[in-house]
Each structure stands twice: as C-alpha cells, then as structure tokens.
Length: 193
Image (tube, rainbow, N blue to C red):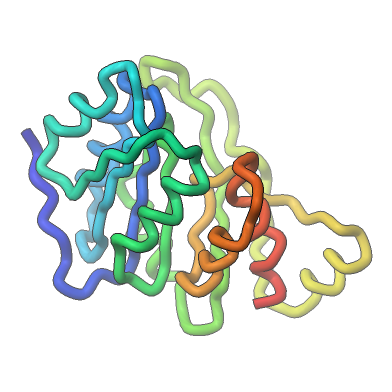
C-alpha cells in the first residue's frame, strides 16, 4: 500500500474523479504518488461506482470520498471543496501523469496564469504509448488568444486531464447546469480570466 503524505501548503491540488473505473483508478493514483515533486495534495472522489472502484481506491492511504452517484460535475465540485491549493488539476480515473508532470507544470505557473494546458499521450490498457502527443498545442501567454476566441468561438485544448486551472476559475463549475463536458465552461472562460 502506498501512502500519500499531503504537503502542508500544497502548490497544486490533484482531484481524481472516478465512476466505474476499477481497472484503471489504481494506476491513476500510482501516477500521482510517483511524482518527482511532492508539494501537491491528492483527493480521490468516487461518484457512486458499482464495479469495485471504491474498494480499489481504499487500498491506498489517500484522501478519498465516496458520493452517491451525481455525475462528474458534482464530483469535481466536491473535490475542489476538499482542496486548498491555488491551482487544480483534474485527473480522470483512466488517465495517468508522467513522473515529472507536477514538477514541469509548477515551473510554468504564476499569478498571471488562469489555465495551463499540456498535450496527452494515448496509451493502451497495458500502458503502452499508442499515439503521438495530442493535440499538438502552442503556449499562449498574450491577449491574442482572447481576441481569437471572440472571433472564432474556439481554441485548441486537450481533454480534462491535460489542463490545470486556477482555483477561482473552478467556481464556474457550480454555475453550470449540465454534466457533459464538465470542463467546457472553464476551458472557454480561462482566456478571459
């Protein structure tokens, strides 16, 4: 059993939400516990899984909560409420972080960052990489992104696990009235924050 020792003053919160990912959630947790930089806090939220996910989560000595099934948005909101760091990374239960992820991410965060995005690698069930990094992304640090979004209505961004959000940006989760693409409202709002 691996133990998560939370940082006294974490720089980043990692929230894993899980619904029926018994086969993968342990690997997601392990990937966080193997980080080269330890000033994070980890919270795992089980959204009423029916497949043994909760039992898999309990094998780890990490902060974990089991909710009645209410959907990913409610699980994410609850997870944010359990954390304290200024930045939040939502990690889907079937995703994994590379060992230097937290170290690299924290090197790029400052008071002016509302969202940081990074590409993801697709892996198979055995953990083998099966594609190049996706989507191919550029870094945006200027106001040109906001103008581009106003003009086109879109920008290229990875799915949930490829994003880190400033805590106050996550407040948009509670005002959303839908449970699909739970990160969508934050992804759209981030360039304007």
